[in-house]
Image (tube, rainbow, N blue to C red; front, side):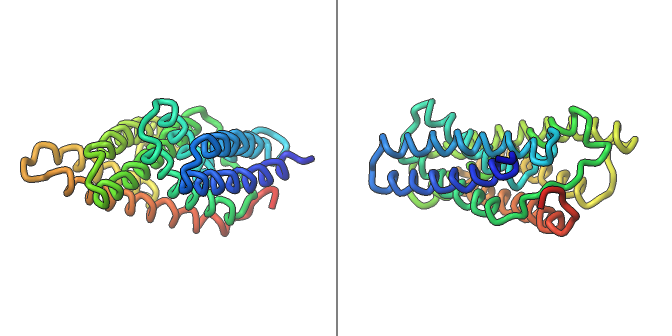
Length: 251
């Protein structure tokens, strides 16, 4: 079976396993929820690795393409939380945003954009890894912010996700600047992509400093966290919609 078929098939089956895991979670079948989630994550990982070989030769660009890599990052973070043995009701509620983003990946065009010469440096791969993981942390921070605003419990849980997201996003900007210098002889350009990244970084830098405002309680910070991810989502998926029209290899 071609690896492209393996990648797509495993993605669909993983999405089904996550969905069944969520259904089991709703019906409080903890053991079944775990088994289905772990199985889904294994298949999801196989899908991602196979995607790296989608065109017959390995391409980190294919493996790390944001629309496919972000759901895997969300699943990985959920798995880490499960192993840390946090409240299961809180952890597995994260299957809701995971299902949303894996649905988008399932409907998205599966072929890969031919990598540019600038994308061959290791700093390109590091940039996409740190950026996608930061986006996943911002997403979970926003999700747990929404839970906090709805249930008034788990106070402060969302805040740590946003902080770690900011740290990884800052690292992404550094390695991205190195990649930019190696590929285009400039650390920063006034392009849409760079300005969007700078806007996200400045927004979350402002969020980090809200702790110095005495009148800014956790409820207000939760609203800012939600607003921040809406910005991330808009900037990211506007780019993905633009990229979907580009010529792709492998269909």
